[in-house]
Image 1 (tube, rainbow, N blue to C red):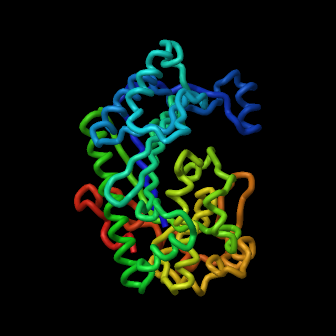
Image 2: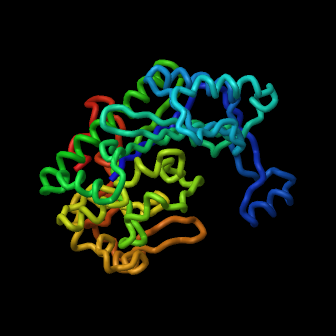
Length: 360
């Protein structure tokens, strides 16, 4: 189990709408035939890389978040922490500012900044992506936050982690209360970020969403090897899968969570089941199911067989999982069921500080 949230930010900046060459073959043919009259459109932000990074620095420094892992400009790393250095955010941004000329600051396509922060009982990885050019209606600043449960980070092997986790799975009520408490803590941190952005950065809108996630290991019988795994994916959307320094220890417990749910007959609901790269395999709604009754949690059922038994397909072109069943009925696998207010930290969180009932 880990928590993930997303803030899509639309700064109050001047935006240019420009025509671009279409990507699809038919529209591209029309583009040339009509001398560019038939085209797609994109929004292009006028803020500079330095200006927006300075504002975001003030946002996170005001929250005590000052541990930088990575800073890249158009996929070129200006800073990458491979030693676990602390309090390096200002130092790295000052270096970036000195090395950045005016042309590069104005003509960038993507800036990425990854931060690490520990607060309360959670360990946060924060991935900030700033897109100068983006689809019309999309927001240029995307902040994705993963929240890990920090109390198992100091343990060195599988047996120690399993013993420490056992109390969470004592019974269903204990499990529900634990997850809800952590989810509420996570939501508060996301709302603190949103409020800080609204205070420091002039914005037109911020969209906030969050959810619970359970990782589905492909090799269910080799969970003890995940701490030393070498299949990290720097292209994954969630920063917990990027393999940054210290991530192995912090994330190790999450690979064991599904097995603990099955062994202790935990009822899963209002949770996303995700792949080893963080892709959503399926969303479990309010009805849910018992983990020991589902093939995804069965040690003797392969990952591919579990996909088939749960009517889930995988589109290799898009890299997305989808419901392959023909049934339109509701139930535990229902996007509509899982959607709604419980899976989002939208306006309800800003008024009450938590979605209430969404975490267990």
